[in-house]
Image (tube, rainbow, N blue to C red; front, side, top):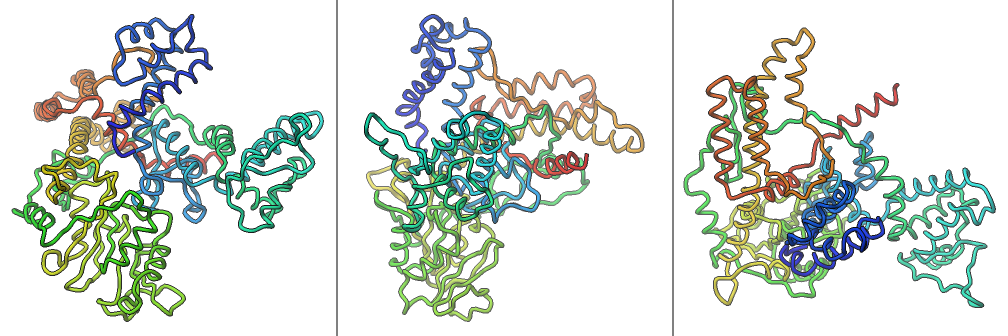
Length: 623
């Protein structure tokens, strides 16, 4: 999803109708209870007063159903659809799993820090986000072999607990339905419509050869299936990999019940603990991010005068940068072909346009496409962040330091995860192609562009824009300019910073009593900890759905109520009370609201909980 306004005007209404159809099946919507029109209006963009009144008269459970549907349609669905699989999120491939992963990271989607780069230990703490992104990830990536095996084991176990004719047991019928939904057939079981055999479903997967195609049409029935038969299970896994029905069963009966375990509370921390004086008396900081979203006690950032202006001037100078709008038929493969033919010496894929290939695969494809007389090698970063080279005539990657290729005869590919802080020497005079996506800010463009350390001094840039992004850029004249692109990217950054600024104010206020509680806990380290101090660091995990039609609360209003409840114990010091008052005043002065609070929470809600979960699981195993 590129354009949120398109979602609101074109998608929300039909999606609300789908939600109403589901709720009718759940007994929430009906002529005698709530009309479909009122339900759709309530879950839509601007509910009528009549619809809100009708919903308010429903039972507690019905109101919760409708509020959950409204939250999904207004917030969770557009947010999840706006993320790119294997760039912002994804499931962990077998070679990406660590030795001891939590159930959540094994079974659900996890945050990615860049293209094909999963976070080390993060998970999504909001269950709705975890559900939505996991469904999308499984549909985009397909079921992993391990997921298919776990599902088959579960079906075999169910089969063993059931009675009756083997072919007619519920588990056997469910297995048969899964296979047939993907275009396969189970041996010895056939159905007829009248006198004619049932027409098979089309294959959803592409067989590797004719033998596999033949095997898919004569798979063993569930009672004869041997999980240890790797060749048969491999073929079955490939058949079911893209099947929606198989994905639904895996998620509904295996992944979600095992991984979506609610916790009443969690220990939480933020950057305030490092930037403030809670842990360290003296702190020094350096950042390439040009804003003041810093912990209060860290002080104001000392900017290098003129740097931002010079960067903006350079990156919008027509002598340095040009726009390269891609046509509507573009694809990652055609884009690589165009880059190879453009004469550029580097591709900086900050917009993550090149998907479907890992870095080694991209380098191999570029080496194949580039002119052999002009380019002898392609430089790329492997998963460990090492600078590697694919060289013509050499059958394996080499370290860049020992490649022996001249600067002018090598091409460099920077993937999205390595567009910051990575230096690779380039020819003094050359061109780099920089990709731009809808999720980038001007800072992202600047960080990526300055991988070319000689920008404006012989090195030039070409900004690759896909039509979907170009269509979102407002132009000051009939033709798009570099300034228009810069304004679009700056606006992206501003909207994010408003939400983050309100979140920072909440963290600033919380740090006031956290410092006091931490000091008391340290002072009494030899005795039993004070429960009131421990409670300060414990954050409630509320997954409940509201049973009221009132709008969602503003985070700052909720914070003010918390302040009043803790004023007597934790705000006796005048300096602490002033810090709280200033932080709340700044938050109220911002133009944000409840929507910005939720946006910030979604962008920042991934939690480093995996290590704690692993310890809990290990303890449970020992017990």
